[in-house]
Length: 236
Ligand SMILES: [Zn+2]
Ligand SMILES: [Zn+2]
Image (cartoon, rainbow, N blue to C red; front, top):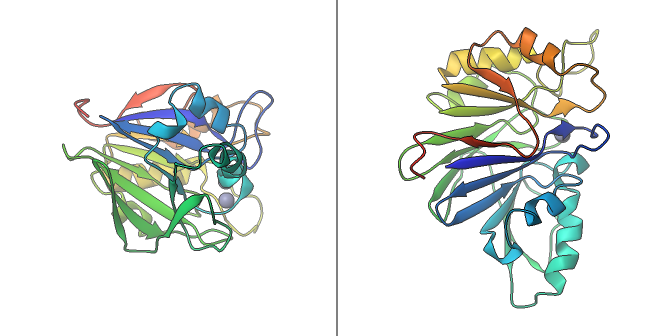
């Protein structure tokens, strides 16, 4: 299974960057995890629109869903195509999408991939998703979430954790809606993950290396836009 970073910033991008979207490819199966601003064009640089099996939207914040709006315009020119969208509960999605709402505890099969959904803690309903291929290789994507104890249980044994690492530190007593670098590292350690990919990097950050310094997990990196990472043994 391969994971390509189409956009890694939130809640707004750095100049020249884009917001959350991740392309997963496992053999012929292609899934877009989130479709934030500036990422539809980057998806089209890599794959044809009619080769996408489904789009997953973890939650309806613009940095995760705004390019669904422009994908809709493209799909309207392809009336034979019905793009599947799996998302947290919403009434925002209609034609030409084939919409499937998903809930905590649900399991969905998309091509060769099994997706398991977990409610996380954010300012709007948001689902984390665990993606497992037929080899048993697995990716756990946190979506946007505050740190909470059970999160690492959902991710236990994942080959790769793709984690919201939006905060360098907690500011005062602000309500936590994202994880700090330390918290993302804690999830990876507790889950026994093989690799931690730090993403949802704050668009206003001056020094992205500072994230890595604080994570405290050996096999961690801050993802690069355009880069592709192998998940598991690389057969998928
Ligand atoms: Zn976000
Ligand atoms: Zn959000």
